Length: 136
Image 1 (tube, rainbow, N blue to C red):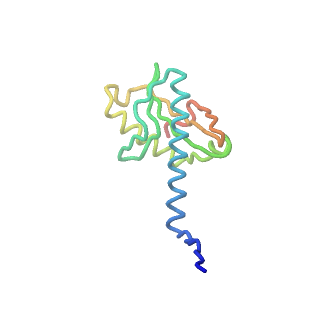
Image 2 (cartoon, one colour; image 1 turned 45 degrees about the horizontal axis):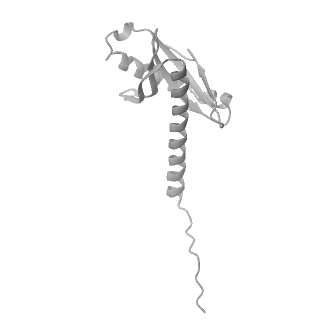
Image 3 (cartoon, rainbow, N blue to C red; image 1 turned 30 degrees about the vertical axis):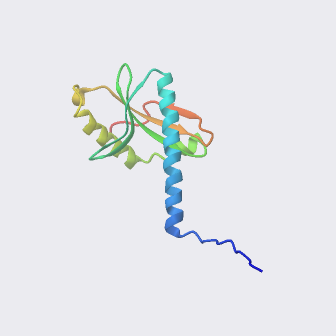
């Protein structure tokens, strides 16, 4: 009798970490896509997604009629949990990166700006919190 055994490999810690990272990346992309749709419905144009400067990364840079909009996207099971994920140190880094970005615009540091926090819950619902944080 020839018995074939199904081989089962135990996932490595590195493999599990890689898989979690992949899921988080894809989840983040889906959240950002939902936020972009919400801004588009408001007539706000996306200039950059995941813009990286020396000071750090900005999830979304948009332009509405009045200002450049720097938006951080946070996703969690609930909108409140997502909102709590923005830490003061991260907000400061976003403001610093925004300053670097503005140095490349015609208006420079005199440009009108707004810092939004877009939250996305587990069902994909999006809430845009305008002026959620600002200059320090």
